[in-house]
Length: 114
Image (cartoon, rainbow, N blue to C red):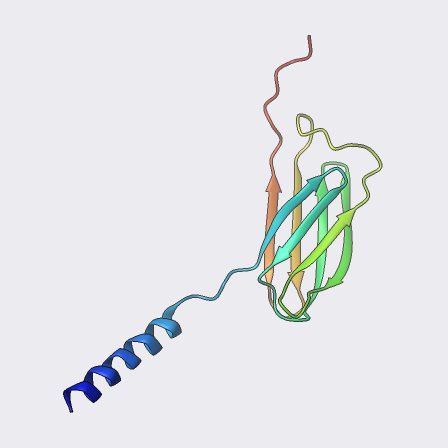
């Protein structure tokens, strides 16, 4: 009887802790800065995602579909190299089923050229 109560209590604790554990939050990770390539993780399975690159000069968007595991990779062809000393870069990803993520690459404080 004590053994079955202990087993039941352990099962209840395991169930509650798994229910309380928060699911992974969608995120963007920088793969490469030239060309600008980002990887999305923890999006919903097969979700259509609009990924937008925001540069000081303007913005570009691409629509991709996440894989069954909720990942995707997007490359933006940039006409010239991004100079991190002169401009900031922000990439946003908004999924059709509610997933959202932002990646910010702030402008660096670089020393003046000699």
